[in-house]
Amino acid sequence: MSARRSRALLLLLVVAGVALLVTAGLQNTLTFYRSPSEITQGPAAHDRVRLGGEVVPGSLRTDAGVTRFRISDGTTEIPVEQVADLPGTLREGQQAVVEGSLDDHGVFRSDTVMAKHGNEYRPAEADGQDSR
Image (cartoon, rainbow, N blue to C red; front, side, top):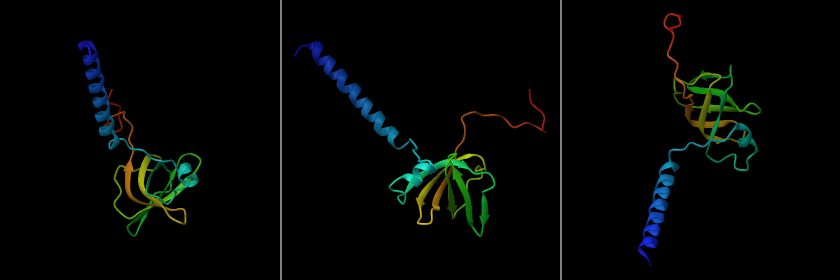
């Protein structure tokens, strides 16, 4: 085998190794979730999944340590129940991702709630005045 072929083969192996390491590293950092429509139509609705969508305005309530709200993808709404403290950043009309499973009554029993945020930062206005 010539020196040129050996270098090309070595370079190919290094590139493949780096690609494999990057792929393996990203596997645990990516967050995938299903929409309410996918959850209700999917064959494995009772499995543990992540559900994402908008917290329906007017649906967020906390009674006796249980927080209830609905998540929608614009077509389908799923009621969610959480028996734990919710992040203070969770708001109605905002995107959220919840982890748990759908019960036999169509209620998503969640044990983890994550508020989704946009990547745009806007500073708060001081005393209702624009800071320009």
